[in-house]
Image (tube, rainbow, N blue to C red):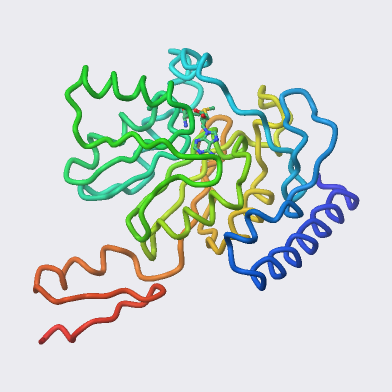
Length: 279
Ligand SMILES: C[S@@+](CC[C@H](N)C(=O)[O-])C[C@H]1O[C@@H](n2cnc3c(N)ncnc32)[C@H](O)[C@@H]1O
């Protein structure tokens, strides 16, 4: 049950954040907003936390590459149902997917066979994680995965290039969530989707540290702050939320018939523009 105090705290955070974003945008757009230190506040770090607070949530510390074996633990299949996660992503063979905060590629290598004519960009800020991914690619002869070394503010994805972004157990530790998600918005094609999987903060029985969990209300607030639209939250997983967001605009699939007809198509802010089908 959410207390009146907690509700007031969230409302206050939203109002303060909205004012800051508007001011920062007026001063030069999302880039200025993301670099505006005032989007974040600081407090004494909690256990496993950074002390950096974004929209009322303390950002967790980053899981170091020495935890790689933990990501690959055999019990994880039973705990997180990774194959069901990927099955629910609605992937098509030519989809271009970004596994953002890919770690060892636990999800990357489950996505790769589902997009044989597409690509998976496995983005991480730790070279050591990308080295593990490269080694697995070589060993398995996989050529539709591209490891990408991102930075804490830039996932290094080309504009309008991505159909689907997957974030599993990673977003809560991004040190600059506003900058990263603003970049994700730019990288997504109109109608592109973000699947955000995080441990359920609303459930105190989920045996994970508080800062490694997220509530739906918090996640929605943070995603909507960059313009993503919440579509649904599916709670088919044992302990995690599976939250679905969309970049407003026409879904990428609408361009297929036109491309087959050889029409030249340009996209502007989510609207399909181009010559009539008879052209
Ligand atoms: C807990 S691991 C989860 C890895 C993977 N998604 C999985 O479920 O197995 C989180 C990963 O996010 C990465 N990470 C943290 N901040 C990041 C950022 N700003 N951009 C990309 N990756 C980031 C970390 O380096 C770490 O490998």
